[in-house]
Length: 263
Length: 222
Ligand SMILES: Nc1ncnc2c1ncn2[C@@H]1O[C@H](COP(=O)(O)OP(=O)(O)O)[C@@H](O)[C@H]1O
Ligand SMILES: [Mg+2]
Image 1 (spheres, helix red, strand yellow):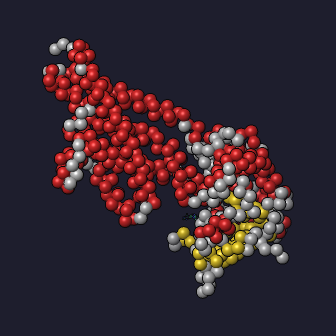
Image 2 (tube, chains in turn orange, blue):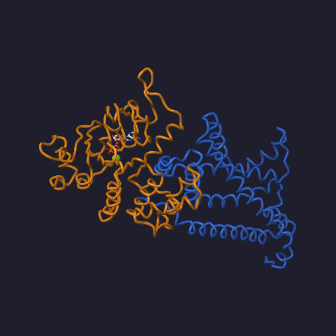
Image 3 (cartoon, protein in one colour):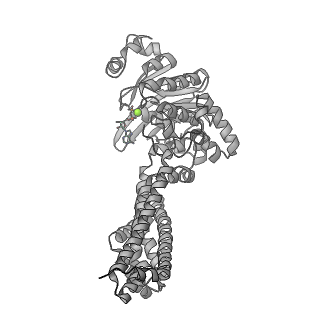
């Protein structure tokens, strides 16, 4: 069996006194799309942010392609923090896409995508921009390269944000509700880019309320409820009968039930 | 009382010199205040608490006392602690320190207004803290603080008039001196107000022009 792209082991996350993740164990398989679903406030973003090391786990470990992220198993069983250079090296395998796009408003689309290549990796400006253009083409925005974020639609901004993450050639892409702040008519263009990425064999973890997308594109679905992973499985296993009662309730309350029926 | 325009014309060379002093002390004072204020804001945000606390106290004291009194203390009280400055350097230092207290608050608010997600996105693509400050925070903040900074610069322009009390030969000092020599207070004060108003109007326009030029960088809220 190959090493999972991401392994989460006994992950506990507390904010102050409030524990929001109560011991998560989850494997993200290589080259597949995994969807994280669950009611709002169940801890999906927190789990994803831990995988990107934007949040540090209170306890437990995360491995990226077998390498510990941030903390390694210590001699007394207590995780020990790794040196900054190790953390950066492991993090560089991960690309992150946010619900709010988070493009830098003072840079053009091309500037946003080429920034890290120039600043972090010391790539010459002309070469960095060439490589950035390749990514912008991939998301269908080559002709918008010179536009600033304020001059782009939400869907275009999110596609630039995807290109920005792709420019560093990550092995894993994390998406936190990438279409939730978009008008319905703009979600399609972003989902299409994500579908193309999936078809290319990119390992992806997607937090999404787009159940149709989850059912059609994801090979694995994990259902998170109240900080606990209630079930993981294929779309058929998750959405097929008989359903977990909490999942049934969730589908009733939050989502388009019809989409799940199609599976 | 008649309004004597000939008098105004005859004062021109002296006025021009005073105008130059006002303009220069203002520009140097504003630049000094902005740089100092920026350093204070960075030190308070990223420095150790041992530095942050006394800095906060200084900022509070300076913001809580009149510029006139600060300047008096600096110029007339400075020699008691071995700080004897000529009027112009004392005025520049006073203006820079006074303005820095306000600028540091403007920059502090600016740092806080940059969405944390913009910094997280930079972290995710591998920028280190210094690169994030240089490439993301400072440029984004500049956009956010521009209107308040222009405003502050205009306030400082008017505060240069206070430098007359420590005998800096700027507009207010020169014009009121001419006024009392010639018994022409109304003409001179009218002229003085006109000078300041003209400068304020001009710098306000410049500020709005800059804001318009930078508008394409403006924040988009999703
Ligand atoms: N930075 C934070 N500080 C305190 N509480 C937080 C923070 N981030 C998230 N939470 C809390 O953790 C819980 C899970 O949040 P989140 O992971 O955002 O859920 P989801 O993405 O599933 O909606 C919520 O109760 C939320 O209020
Ligand atoms: Mg969330």
